[in-house]
Length: 300
Length: 320
Image (tube, rainbow over all chains, first blue to last red; front, top):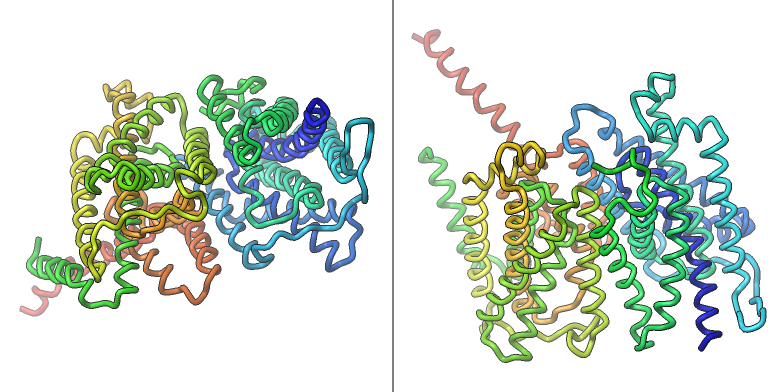
């Protein structure tokens, strides 16, 4: 039993890293555009398929396919931002939050149904990054999971460096604090919005590519991580990348533990999803601003 | 109302009443489902378009009402009308509770919370398959044992008329004003003396109870109830119906629901492409005509109207 718990804990942490990448994307978009992206899970799904087809059709090596997926997810997000989200920046648009919800919800329906047509409803599994499993004492874990966790962590480090050190990252941070002040010091805010939505999409796409070999790809795979990423972003505080990472690991771990400890094993997987949703509802009720939220990024 | 309008309305009413006789059973089924979606869409428009309470959990209430009535009738042996009334009451009470617990939430937070609520309900309905039948579906006692579906059509029509009448009365009264005030700015509404807490809970309860009633009607008509009723995709369809018609007007939302449902069936040959089409149509409507396509079309008509009337007196002196 203890060994099983340990394996579940390690698996939970691995998934936690993937969740952290997805949630970091969601929170970058939120902190700049001030909208919750309901299509985030679908961009994640598209990222998985981009990687799959890069490998299957173009013969790209699996690891390079991650970058292909991120680049294509970036372009896809930029396309949507440029065509559909521009009213968010116009002063004549009424109730911008509602507009953001409707527009991104519409994008999510569109992408999910395009995926069903284009990729078929059947699950597809891209080739492994590394074959085999690691056996280390009582812990048995596939190399794919280890690679996914490692690559996810690397993406998060790269994101943090980008946000902290690069001029573009600082521009993102400046706009997240005050659009007007950023414009005064010469930051082109239109470009920053596009960049933020693109970077958020690229993170989701990268996560999708990493998850492909672990779970198979399916058009509806975005639904669950979407809500999961909401839980994490709210728990970690909207707009806080560090908070999102901590919350993601916590959620991944508690989900693994929930599956391991739930008394009825035939239902534990189904209820694991409901469990994280209930956690989110509870967090929304008790601490709507999360635990690490930055004050200037409060929604209302 | 001018005589031509009156005649048009009477003709439309006669066409609607004669609908079950005019069409084959397949399109009658589509008509009944369109009525079901019309009630759901109208109540969603009341909640979102009028009161600005963004809920993605509306289909959860539909599903809850459906299961409530179906289970009460099949397991407890209650008569169907009582089951449907119970569905209405249960959805209303749960809606009030959700509305009350969500008082601190706005916009996307509320949308996510309600979506999570409806997903949790769907997961429970899917997993507890000893009670609900799970994904295989729950067999529901039919409401009428007739060969034709016409009684369902007239009952649905009556429910639609009653709920639409009640909701229209609400939105044209002071309550409608309060709802819109809350939508535009809650603080300002509260400062102007609107009891924000009371009316937010109230609109949630009312909209949810209509959703629950529609769900119960749907369950007893369709015969096999699956948890898919409360899925995010179904919610997406209702959102598309409301937005394409115009979420800020009840009749526009109803017409949107009916048109979209008939289009969904008419374009059946295109299979999965239909949902892509409606997704794209939803996005285009949100992007370019936020008040809905119907409002856009209506605006064109109104714009043409006064021009003609202005042209008429101008011509008369020239002729004399």
